[in-house]
Length: 102
Image (tube, rainbow, N blue to C red; front, top):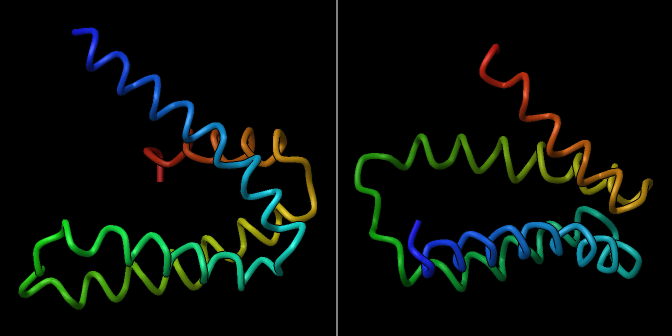
């Protein structure tokens, strides 16, 4: 692996790890559903200029947005508000392990 690729990989892992601590701080100030909503709005505004218009894929996008934005993340952040950031990061990481079997 080239040094630049390794540095990018380390930066991504660091951002992923800090994510739970920052989310925990945000959840101390805001209710989980509001926090998720604000988070998605901010990320959407930042990323929309870089994403091409997905012609013919709107149905799939709406379904994924409803499932992840309306169910998965609100439930995850509601649970995160009740436990430590370290516990929530471990639970989130281990929840992906059985996914290929499903």
